[in-house]
Length: 315
Ligand SMILES: [Zn+2]
Image (cartoon, rainbow, N blue to C red; front, side):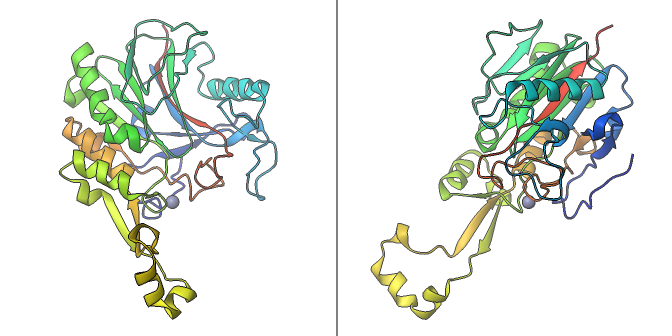
């Protein structure tokens, strides 16, 4: 395995997710090198490569019809999605495991599973936790951060769907809390991996998002970047026109605000007691890397879904 990414381009981070190339049909999954030592553990973040779906927005340099779309989206048919999911499980040697797919609602709702949930009733929620072997917990993403947690001593695993809404509701922090509460997990036994998602280079947000974070976190000031907006030629020529004639909300903006979702979740995981040495946060930006990832922002919503997955192998 070799690292494919320059961490500075990926936006920094303390960890270093590696890309392990699976021989099966070019399918590629990102894994945390330190976690591959645990034979009982199945984990990974899927990429767009190695499937049978024809994405409407795939870059021209990628072969058409080979996208690994794992979500039920309007442009893809359910048979493709089934084939893609089977391929993914097979690449992880997890064909025998039950894939658990919640109904994501951008909440802080975390489900603790002791058995397989009924297939005809997907559980609403944005976090799953289990110590039950044979369940492969999953979260679907296309810019939001998928976060994996594992207690390597007691064998407890969790997956979390951390977009800005889940993050402002402290989902990552609550996920760790749930492992401590329900399974007695100790901080020294916990590892975390923040998977590929939209990073601070690309995640411009409105002032209302910044205000929600400011209301929640004393360190909110460190989570935002402000970048100067270049004025248009018309604005340069007639600066007074825009200043005086328009009401404040309609005036051209002087800066854009960018949210560092990775940093926000790093803060939460560290506050929850996980050592920085055991948090992998170096995954690349989904919006920057069209050759590897789907991105809701880049593709204007017409894109596929990737998965973050974690589970305990059955005996
Ligand atoms: Zn980016």
